[in-house]
Length: 527
Image (cartoon, rainbow, N blue to C red; front, side):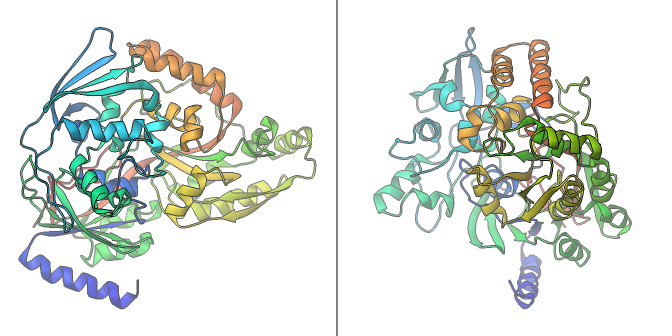
């Protein structure tokens, strides 16, 4: 997008804002899809599920506690294998230029939303759709059936007890889609892929348009069941450079900005007209070894690689007081975090010795993929890659840095095309299962969310048992066992846990920072 176009865009929206309340959110990357069933990255999910859709249950604002949403209430059977939901009535679906709904939300939409993810052969499932999150959490195996009792009652039958089940239903992939819309796309010949580019939900904002790598435009949904939002227009603008995003905050061209660079925090706190909102992040930044590829199937190679990295120097140079060294795959703010874990030792000499023992006395060559966008858990992937490259050269590992645009990066890592790749995760539901099983479980290898492509029976058994345990104390012991196995086997190099920082204009009211990193604007207003 040219500088002239950017200037014209902001001028037009500034003029429009005089007549209507328009909030401009400057984000760090481009969405890969507007169907929240098919994506896992926060950029895509903020642009789709949080703005356009609702779920049966949601998390209370600023909390990890589950509350009713499209479901008014629910009951759980004694054996914890059956969940019955009573649904809200008179909830309207949005419309667009190719579809106008003839009915309101009902049980058919819930059954359709989940059965298409359960069965790829379903006539309304996305052709070749990778329901990565659903599969990564093994819900295709855990949910035995979803039944419509009547128009406003739905029953989920499970194959076994699943402790985090309700919290899972509050996650983005569980956003409720319109069965009637999907049927109309098939009937008209437009196809189900249209769900990725012209989404329709029950949420606070109606999707209007997307110009690739530029802007996403929404308008307030006047039939929203919680009441029409205070904003008339919501605009997401893609500005990949954090320095440019900050400049636009200074000039008033952005009202909310994602992912400020840690080195800019002191400056931001002194600027007039804007404020920094900050909280502890529920995240982990890491580097994943593709253990299905040589030489990273060799534990001693992974140990040597890990031992060669000076993590403290990365924290000092990149996180600037906004991050702490990670030693576990889950953050210290999460229950079941293992305090007994000892962090990896940093020693170039010991790393060289391990590499020799592994059969590589002269080192080897490999690729290191660096993330192309600024994320809380990894503010500057390129710079971190360069620091790692220098550290690894000291033990004879010659590293070629590789990157792609964000949607391509995500797709290629899901396919396992990398050797070593930077990545990170912000928790979606406050449960350790959302890290340990989704990112490191055996089923997550096939789903694509386990970038290490690591399937360890001892680890997996502990995680699976924890999912069925009803008490947090028993689950904690099992998750601590899993963390010990993880640290011993080293499928990742754990790098950092970081704070969540957002920059907000003083004109904005009602904005709160979300523990999961979601951008939610339904309660936001602008002066």
